Length: 109
Image (cartoon, rainbow, N blue to C red; front, side, top):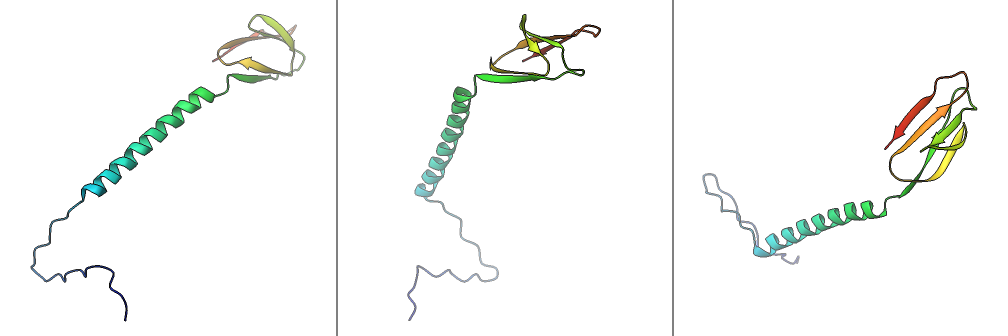
């Protein structure tokens, strides 16, 4: 004989008033706890991303035609094509010059 797993639902008769829904304090506290946990996890994720985000980057400069002089923040860094690594995060100003061509200025943020 199968075991019973709790009270049987009452049959609904036509025209009968439904019973009001009820929520226990335990269910409310579990829901509130889950909401607080998600909020703390979201805050921690954003905070750790800002704390651990890379402080250095790189910059690749390609020109057509190649062979242009590349200046970064007022210092000559080489000839294009050029990859500059270990640049501090933040704004930089690049200047690219080649004899017979217009000088190009670019600012990064």
